[in-house]
Length: 92
Image (cartoon, rainbow, N blue to C red; front, side, top):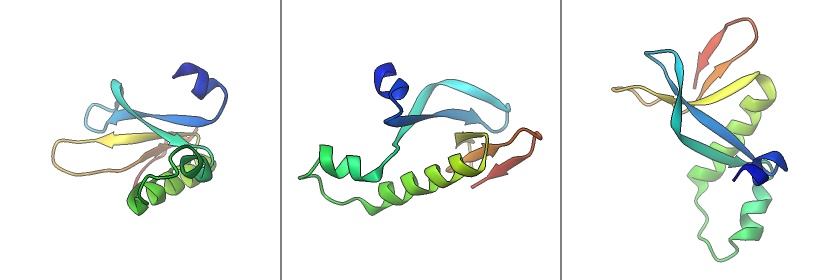
């Protein structure tokens, strides 16, 4: 997996524990840099618009913020946690 990440074909979004405010080492999610690659690699795979939109949102957050993580909390679902260099935290 490191080869794919180093080749910049995919991004890794690590899990961020919202209550502990720390990065969890397991359960990362991966997003493709170009959503068209998914269609190329999996041509017979049914369109899953939820994953496609999630990938597009991740790419936009990655463009706007320094660090983007997948959020984890016990009661609420937080798809993304975005941090910038001014210690500002945004939840999406």
